[in-house]
Image 1: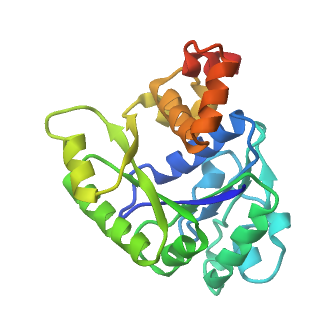
Image 2: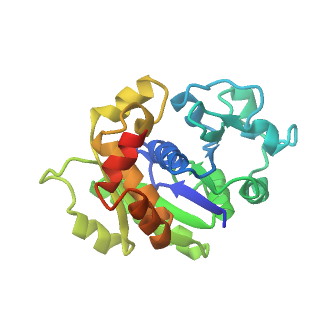
Length: 258
């Protein structure tokens, strides 16, 4: 059954877009149809990250009733599909974010996973994106201000009746000045579904306008995102992947395959 997942954060700059792109790319490598939607309408980044900063039709056009959602879907060379938002200042106003839930349901019919990259915070567009989702994943850094804002995100999503799957901690260095993972889990009261290390491969991938799982498939970051993607498929699928790879070095075997 197709799933609609919204990636949110309480504050910007924590790695939300990187997470949305790489989870989508990892799921696509696991032979799933994926559409990643840039719902960060005022400061979109997905098109920039994947080498398509300017396209003829964007999510903004769809929300303004100027185009159908199918016209705004673009396919990356990897097979991952994206729906970018516009970088044009002229397209930043007068769009109807209330259409997002309807758009999500349309995309759900043609994909296994629809992943929304939400705007940071809790403004109108962020709330509309959360409303469009069925499952919520929160991204934060192991720092008190970011975790505090993540707690707000957890509470907002739960108050809206959404299924909060857990939190992904990015830019993790394992330093003493960072919040301990146990403290973060206790504070947020949701599972930690992945810990992504701080690694230069993320910036190198951005420079190459591609996902880390494509540019640096054997990096720690790529492996961690792939692990999360496998878990997202559920225990049955995880066992099947394990069996398919002869129960040996599952992540390594998958990466080597590509």
